[in-house]
Image (cartoon, rainbow, N blue to C red; front, side):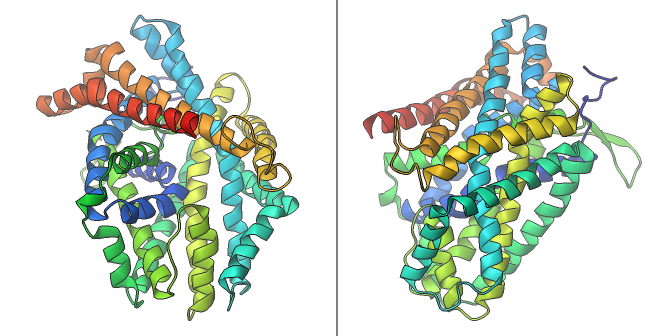
Length: 466
């Protein structure tokens, strides 16, 4: 399945191409609303400190392990794990990590496309001035009206899925890399511009205080679990995306100034990705809360913050049409950069099974689109149809996000720390500091699996208790 020493699907042309792609996978809708809200709800600066600690002790070590496995295997998560299991002389059943990751990403794509499709509608509606002078009741009615309109939601879901799979169908260099080279710089520019704008609003100081005022009294066990869960999920771990992106990561790049080749460090690269992901989450909070507080509104958790509260604020402020449209373009960019990474693991596996990439993208996109219809209907015709943990959408979300992802992340850590030959891990990571390598190995063998197991059990107990 390999040609020479290069992955069958191609390679990122540079280290920064991988950084942009992996950051794009990590930065998604959760960064825009969930992290800022958690920070404000659970003690501001205290929560941020705990979150950063969780990133360092759980997120980064597992991400390093996942990228390492991907680059070592050079294929889809499924065939990467088959290959690495054979090299480690262990059961082929370890390939289950790859299957579960690719399936989890695929299932998440099915409902992520529906939610992300809302951003397309809101970009259009905001640009048309649809929220100018709207009332709180009007903004809520607008959101609920969109959800009640199954055909509208289906159209937005269809458009977003077509956009996603068109990028994936074009391949690594012509599709994925070209997309992130446009989307990620655009996202950063828009975010910086919106932060600058937010700094001129009367609610900026209150917004900063809401997020960063350190109140350790709010650091309950629930807050720590929220930080741990956010640290794990924000980096797109356990869904095959980081592993397959790691498969396209070059081992060496040529320095443009000296012309000499130098090795691409997995650890430092992952550190940059984690930093950028965190900065986007913090930046989103510095945009959202000053706007909310400047208009005398209350921050609320979940999609309501993005699709009810903020449109109301934009509708009441000067230049709200422009600022609101730019904001939803930002949200759409973050959603698209994540969605293409969700579809890639399954597409790569089908390509390795003999399908052409355009056909593989069509099969994955069409199947995910069909499953996504269940999510569309969960907000209207099927909203009262519940089983197990809730609606069809809530069940798919719980299965993929709360069960499969943490299980996958925990198994990745166990395989990298306990199963894979240490000589192979050390060679692939090529850390200059042996002490740093030993710290990573200890964390990925003990700390990270236990922490992810806690996230998994917390979600399971919460679901059963609820």
